[in-house]
Amino acid sequence: MSCQEPSLPPMGTALPAALAFRKNLVCYCEDPTIVVEYLQSLQLPYVLWENYDSIGAREKPEAGQVLVLPNVDRTLTLQQDELAKFLQVMRSRDTPFFVAIATVSPDFVPYAHFTPYLKRQFWFACAEPATGDATDLREEALSQLRTSLRGIHVHHSIRRYVLDIIMHLRVHRFSSQASGGGCSTHSLRDTLELCQTLALVEERPFVVPDIVKTAAYWYFPFHLELIQDPSHEISLQYGSDPDLVAQLVNAMQQFSLDRASEIHYPLYFQYMVLRDVLNLVVPAI
Image 1 (tube, rainbow, N blue to C red):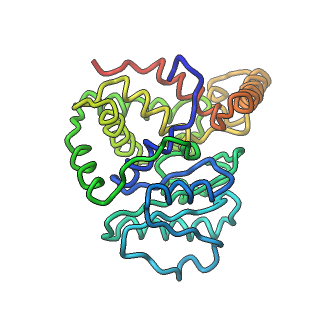
Image 2: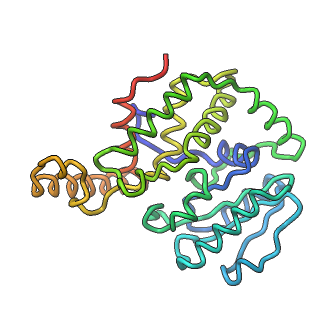
């Protein structure tokens, strides 16, 4: 991916893995009926929420279910935190499967439009479903998928490689130092599970460094939290010229907005930071 323009992960790969690992997804799709029609084509049971009133009092399903959450980026802060608590409780319940798919608008920026609590409930962001994304997601197929994913070997050097990427992202000059760049304590596990997914797609019995890079491009742009104010750029603490830093940050922000509009990839600034880190960190051998 580093040699090509970035793109959002396909729903056809993201959804089976999310069902297997009990993860939630964000989908850049303004019309939630596109997601609903996709789930209908897969014959998956789903529920579409019409509003976000009284979230705490809503019934929690016992059977397997995909929960479609339309336009979550337009909800109030209080509603987002209530939703995050609901999703956290659902993940701990003993159901055959449960996945929430939150649809958002094209200009959605995770750290600006989601509360930190809600953002942590989602694995990564993917593109809207496309023709040909359909796959077998019956309950027996999910059981076999989980077994196959558990069989993908992750060497300790790969784990170390992912940790190095996380550490470099946390201290990057454009990362928000107050939040560790958005890399939470779940980042290692989430990335390794995504690596296992991609290894299975490539029919590999183990994870290789190239798969880690692809997984990083899928996972981290959604989670990275970057500075908005040039005065928060870390090199200022070591004597950098504030005017030059402000010019640099503003230019990078404007360039990323222009590129995001050109190639329809909404997380371009995050992608640039991640690409910089991947060029610095030495891959596992």
